Length: 73
Image (cartoon, rainbow, N blue to C red):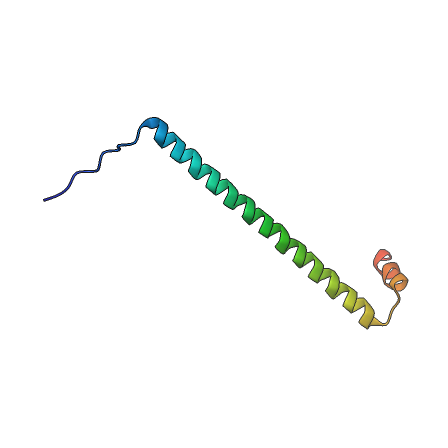
């Protein structure tokens, strides 16, 4: 025999509070994800800077020579 849907026993105020609680939970999670995103982006930028610096050092050219060649293009 099929069962009917369980009727909502919570009041509208209780339902509202539950939804507000869920929103707060997701907002905190979103904040955490944004913080992680920023950290990862900073790490990517730092890695690129490191690779660029290493390439400059391995090239044997001075920083002034490299800057001059970049600005003359």
